[in-house]
Length: 153
Image 1 (tube, rainbow, N blue to C red):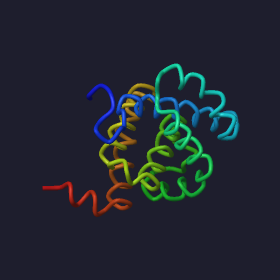
Image 2 (cartoon, rainbow, N blue to C red):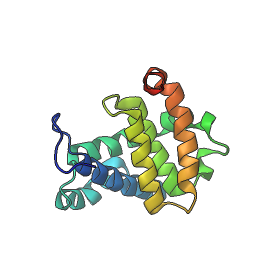
Image 3 (cartoon, rainbow, N blue to C red):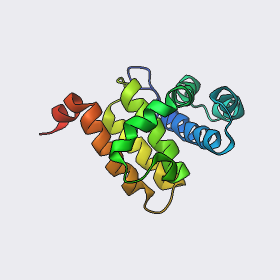
Image 4 (cartoon, rainbow, N blue to C red):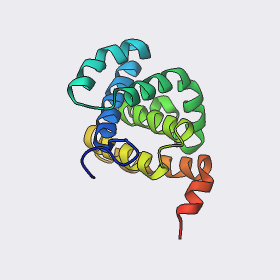
């Protein structure tokens, strides 16, 4: 991963930090029932101190907060259990990645999946990343079919 912003102005390191903080915020939302606005306020200070992409962090948390039911419904066909039965860290990351796949076409699907797997490996259960990978591969193949097909040899 390169350091600093790319030509398009996006800093991949800052985005990674934003996703990690968003994972923590969405996890907190799930456990405590706090809304997106309060979760953002809770984690925004840490975001600023980490030199992360605050705007992206807020978009992810607000997006998951406002689209949670639709994201869960969209993910359900790819799950082998109910959304609520998925490990809380994995559930939070699946929701964030589903939001990115459905609402952030500017982010390549491979980046969404790779970043989700890195976060789950770091914060989730021992084999959680395998489960998340399987779900997101199927979701991307359906939700971003043209992009997935174009990336295959």
